[in-house]
Length: 253
Image (cartoon, rainbow, N blue to C red; front, side):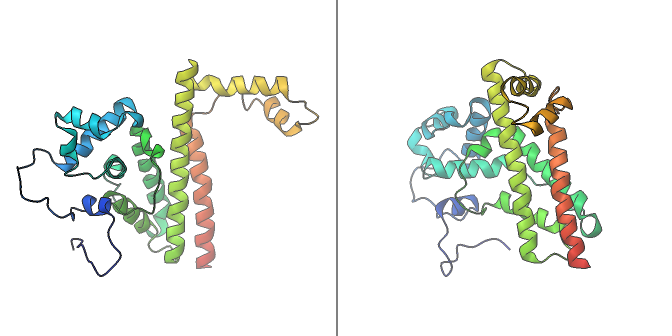
């Protein structure tokens, strides 16, 4: 069933109405030469190429060869445009699967797909979160993630909490990766050089008597080479899913 702009419930924020195609048509006048998907696509391409700071209503209009005021027929403000950009950047969610006993495979695939989307568009994690997801694309991601937990025995509230925990982990990983890449570009050092240099600095600055645990890590050679970001992501994801598995077993005991 298609969504409706039901006036009996909470008022739809303008950006939500735009995302779902529920915004009232513009008054009669000259036929518009733009379309909302084209505006959003141009803004996403601009953010991908030059970063989020490059995105403005005037710059997007320039990319489209249109007047800035023409964009306001479709998007009321930059904040609205950013919300629509985030929804578009996520793209299609992975097909739901891995339900029941195989829920873990489904959620691992879901998390990897979200991480891949954020790596394709690292600016997404820089857009402030103004509330729970309401755009159609993001709701599709949430729906497919929740379906993975069908048949696990978890309560509906617990399923939502699992999804919040999982997407928070993925977003934090994506933000950390983006920041490390920015720091690497600014310093001229490769990312895999950062941890070995960090270990050397700790050895020079930290007194072993005061920081024995850190020196144990250094002595074990943990910081001699940088683990790949994929390795760290998989390790953390496995530990998170271990916790969810423990909860599922408790609920089914």
